[in-house]
Image (cartoon, one colour):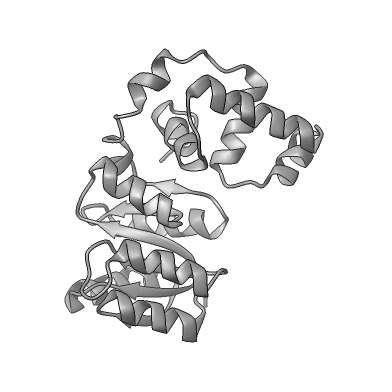
Length: 208
C-alpha cells in the first residue's frame, strides 16, 4: 500500500467517503477518529505518515490536535480539512504546524494531490482557500520586486526545502541562502515561513 493516513472528523459518513476515495488513490487509511483527542491518541499509537483533521471537532479542535500531533509524532505531517476559507483558519492551521489546508468543498482528487505534496515536505494550500488570503496581498503587491535569484530561493522555501537543500540545488553557499531569505523577508515585510508561502501562492510563484 501507499502512504499511511489517519482520518479525523466527527461525521462518520464523511470519514468513510474520504477513506473510500483515498483508497482508490492508493493511500492506506490506518485509522479513523471522531474527535481531536482520539486523533492524537491514534497518531501516537499508529505513527501514520499523514493525519487529515477536520478543523472543528469535539473535545479538541483540529488545529489544537495538529499542534499536539506534531509534538508527539514528529514524522506525521498534518493536513487540515475545513469548511471555512477565512484567512484566520488558514493562518492558525499553519501556525499550529499543519503543512496543508484543504476545503471540504474541494474534490477528492484535490485532497489526494494535497496529501502527496505534503508527504514530499511541501506546504499546500488549496486554491479555494488561498484565494481569500488577501489580507497581506496588498502589502505584497506594493513591496519591492524580488530579483531572479531571490524568487528561486523563495520558491524552494515555499516548497518546504531546507536551507542546505536550497544551497545544493542552486549551487550557492548556506550563508548566501540565509542572506537571500533575510532580504526577501525584509522586502516583503514577512516574518515567518507561512507568510512566504502565502506570498508565493498569491503571486503565482507557487501553485496552490
